[in-house]
Length: 241
Image (cartoon, rainbow, N blue to C red):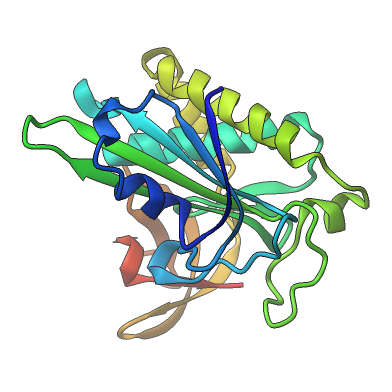
């Protein structure tokens, strides 16, 4: 594993995106930081992290889309790889909150932000950003957040954790042709609140429904109170939990 270690930075994703020689950097290059001042998640949410306590990393991936793979393939591959790596560490009650938050029980322990850079030669560079709460124990103002230490009542070696996760992601992406269908099923089975009546917010109001799964384009499929099946893009709906 080739790793660039930084102290404090605005964002590990931005560090890679601003590199003028991005396409010349090694595939699966890993950038980590002790702390970041402008970490971002889905919907533009900030990712709060105490310095030195958590895993803050970005992984560069070259040309994942050069075959028939889609952006949602990459989301599934990364989410399932991290889910499987944490399962091997006996983290309990793991789930994937659509599209790619990592949950333990009803608590969020990790967030993933994937950004794709499209080149003029049609090649695509992907930057996989991961924030994983590891040894932080204070989440004042973030009642839905937790960490591996709080959940498992022990400290974790962040470097060892990083190496396990990066290895799982590299294996998953390098073997995606063979892993694709089984990983899609793992993703569907691991969906947070799947099959449970839940509350959702949309621009037109709130409603109760049940998550049924995710369609091939990555849209969340929900059955409403009238048993009508609806599909939603990421910014169209919010799960209340």
